[in-house]
Structures are given as structure tokens and as C-alpha cells.
Amino acid sequence: MGAGVVIIATLALDAAARKEIGSNRSIILKLMRAFLIPSENNDGSLALQTAAGKALGNLTITTAVCTDNCCDILFEDPELKLNNLIDLLDDEEYMCVAANLLHNLCANSRGNMMVINLRANGHLQSVLLPTVMQMVRTTEGKQLEAALCVASQIGYVIPEYFVQMLESDTNAAAAELVEKLVNTLKSIREPSPDYPRIRRLLVELVTSIVEKCPRYKEIFLQKGMNDALDMVKGTPSRLEKYRVFLGDEGVVAENLPMRDLIDKARRLINLETPTPDAQPVQP
Image 1 (tube, rainbow, N blue to C red):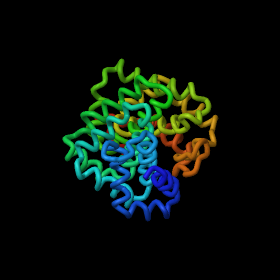
Image 2: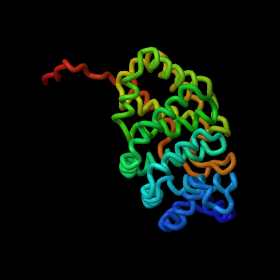
Image 3: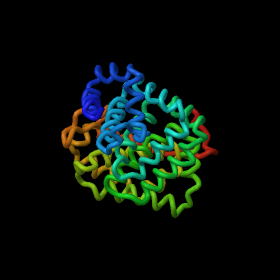
Image 4: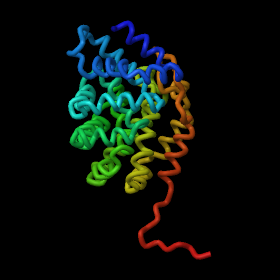
């Protein structure tokens, strides 16, 4: 099965092939089991498990039918399989592959992920959310990129719990989180091929935080996020045009240019939040 999985992962980079493969539920089932329950396979090798995870990540890039098929498999035993997927974030060998799959499912099949979360007794808010936000606060490099990959999307799947977590932060904890994000952006003048999406994912998380929790706008302003965003905008990278890579080469482009993403984050941070007592201006 190993060579076939690698071939599927490569074929799935093409949109038409992605749709055709994704419509075959038996293929998705085998890939999900190889990635999430490797003990069920005759060849429980690291290479096979990684290849299966990459294939699933490529199959869930955008096409709805593919994400629906993956969600169908998760529905079979949501608590076990979601737990297995979350557990892989703690494994250095698989964390990037697991984070990419979680990102794609949260971004492209939010409704299904909400239902899966209910059936899994709220594992997204009780386990995944605190796990990735703690990783954002404490890790660097590849681990941080993996955490940002999930954190940037999970707020749109369980927004009430995302807001609850942010609002429960003390002023000091909120400032510490923002400082981590600002300092990380300022320190990466050029993305590394080892973690090429880290700046983009960080800006996506900033956007999500400000959209869901306006209290953070003032903290981002005070800590210099505008300057950090301007620096990133002024140091564009070819790597940031892509979301999927084969080796060091980008093969699947991002939908939104990095400059536009930065402009959106900047607008949200600098948008004045109306006070509750504010009255509309009369013409």
C-alpha cells in the first residue's frame, strides 16, 4: 500500500484528480485508517502513516466532496478518531501532517466539524483548543507553525469557546500572547523552507482573534502589530504564494495574496470599535 499512498498524495495535488479520488470512499477509509489507526495495517511504518496523512491533507485542500468524505470517516467513531488526530500533534514525526489535515477540515468543512465535535463530547474545545493555544504561546519554528495552522481556523468552528478562552485571559496573559505574535513576526524577515507558512498563518490567527475578540485590538496596537505587519508586507517571499509544497517547491497556490491578508488584518486592528452608548450620527 505504501507506494500507492505516495502516488495518491501526488495525484491529489491536481484539482480534477482530487475530486475523483475523494469520491471513492474506500480510498478515503484506507487512508484515514493508515494515518489514525496504523496498528490496523500490515505495514505500520512511519513512512506509510506520514504518506497517508499527506494524502488526506492534499485531498482536503478545497474540494467539498473530499472534506465530506473525511468527515464521514470521522463520524464512524468521532471520539476515538478525533482523539487520535489531536494526539498526533504531540508527536514530532506527525504533528505537521496532523495540523494540516485539521486546518483543512476546519476551514473547508466547518459544519461537519461542528457536528463531529458534538458527537465527540466537545473535544475541540476541551482538548484541541487549549492544546494549540498553549503551543502558540510556548513553541517556536516547526512546532509553532503546526500550532498556528490549527489555531488560525478553530475559532471559526467553535467561536463561542474561542472567545471564552481569549476573554478569560488576564491582561498580563493577553499581553504576553500578543507580544509572542508580534515578536515572532518581527523576527522572521524571510520564511524558512522548513516552515514556509508561519508568517501567513500567524497573520490569519491575528485576524481571527481581532474578529472574534475586539478587546485585543488595543493590545495589538500597543504592542506594535502595525509595524510588524508593515515589515512583513515589505519583505514578500515567493514561498508565501503557496500552501502546498513538494520539497522546497510550491505546487498549490494560496487563494488570497499575502498583501491582501495583511491589509485585512491591519484594517481590523485599526477599525474603531463603537462604544455601547454611542449614538448614530443624524443626517
